[in-house]
Image 1 (cartoon, helix red, strand yellow):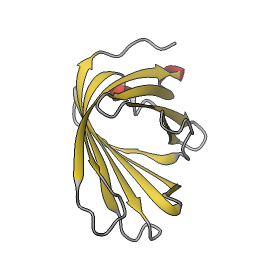
Image 2 (cartoon, one colour; image 1 turned 120 degrees about the vertical axis):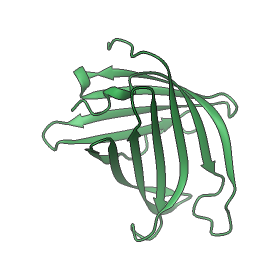
Image 3 (spheres, helix red, strand yellow; image 1 turned 90 degrees about the vertical axis):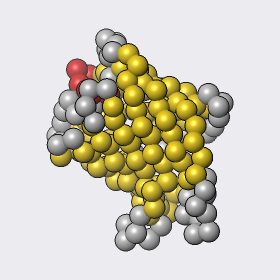
Image 4 (cartoon, one colour; image 1 turned 135 degrees about the horizontal axis):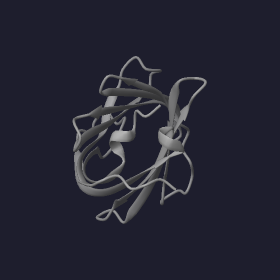
Length: 157
């Protein structure tokens, strides 16, 4: 249940995001910085983070919760543009890689979502997001975040 303990603390985040996901004619990416602070919850069975995207004028929050009975994580996201909590992705880690899947919509169409977490040592991590518009037959990578630690984990509430 302590799979996300590596993420506690503060981070600089280099973002690379596809400007028009699921648009076959688009291959344009944008890059922008982020600052992230992650705090533990429930003695390792959860955490919450807030990320600021200063050049976009937006913020986001992620809530990660470990379901002890199911033995898997649920990851929820919300951002300051909508104020809505998106449907969760669920899954877990095998070694230093975590895979999480869920159902959502993008611009009104149903999609599958895949998050991949890569633990790259004590001071680095990577997160990737993919969408599938065909039920998971094909996947399109549309967002990559590279994390560099800037500060230690803070105590929980």
